[in-house]
Image (cartoon, rainbow, N blue to C red):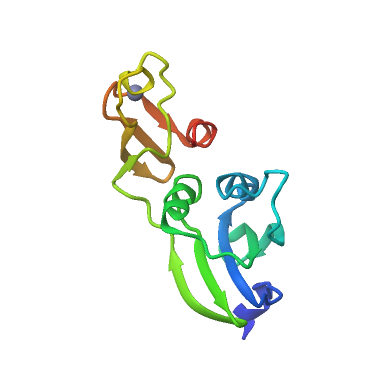
Amino acid sequence: MSEEKKTIKISPIKKGTVIDHIREGQSLKVMKILGLTETVVKDVVSIAMNVESSVGKKDIVKVENREIGSDELDKISLISPETTINIIRDYTVVQKKRVQLPERIKGIVKCKNRNCISNQREPIEPEFKVMSGEPVNIKCIYCEREMKEEEISENIV
Ligand SMILES: [Zn+2]
């Protein structure tokens, strides 16, 4: 039970998604990815930042009445690879998954190199190879420009 003391009890929600183990300070970016920073959001959202956990500090975001899809999970994995997703129905966790950094990323991030062919008029979707996950580092398959975490979160589309 001693370990239990350290974990924060998240107040239950009836239906929706609990996004847990978000890297400290990244919850606002997660919200941006999920479109929750728009002014017209009707979902009930709760955020906990800098929560103490057994592996250091973390952020938690709860979104009521919405289940997060796999496209959104891929995006979250780019800025916070340790994140876990709990899908809640009727106050019960029906699905628990960890985001997974894909080997390739297509169409989620745009290349920061403005002269890159993927930023020109050609119908080419930006595509990156994931070089490492800790810290996250991706490389454009067209111009070989590498992008780190801060640049990635600025260029998420
Ligand atoms: Zn490029």
